[in-house]
Image (cartoon, rainbow, N blue to C red; front, top):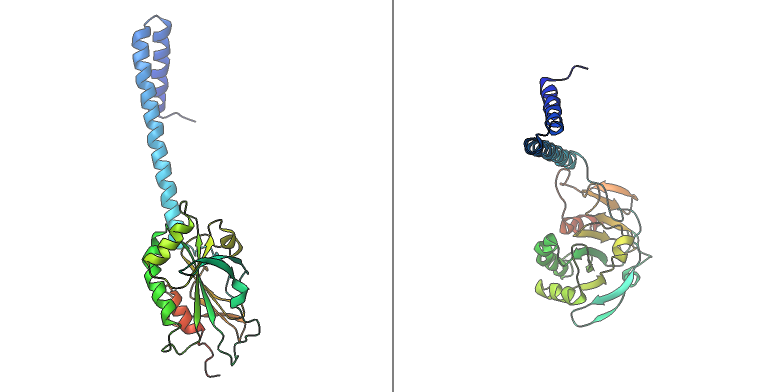
Length: 259
């Protein structure tokens, strides 16, 4: 294959430097050789920058043109049972998720069994901080006498994804944002692993019988679970938009109301 002029000149320069060294013109040869190495290193650096830039551009293209990878226990699956220590605003006490469930519940049950909203959060997570007050308001809204649907019990599961945390930080976070629901200690992320949670905040809405009705970390958070039909359904009005926990609660807890 024919070499380019640039390649030929570069090889000639290297050969000339070697010849200068062999004829005793060492000092000049060393100076020129040093310059040539600097040029070579600079070229490699520039090439590396270009390659890395192209790599990150590629990642951005993939991120914006593909569906997100689903994570977390999916709608229609049974929520993993867990236990641990939970802070209720006064002290840390034993907590059993199973105690919240009504395994006899069905979509047409006459009993007003509560649903469960589970939030996985990190006290160092910026998005968790910005949404904490709003989540606290929802926890009060969906247990108030004005709410016509079934009560929704809120549970926060505090993990350690971003940086080191502690129970003291969990207590401070809960108090700062005036959340009145229980915070479960999952600093060893064992519960998060069981629920397949990889990021915070992640929200789940769980039916009284323990079946996940909605998961904010799904490939599409516009999908909910229909307990009557036993299949996924699209939440009304959110075909192209992001669904929030309160919106999922209002549609799914009252899906078959009046039937």
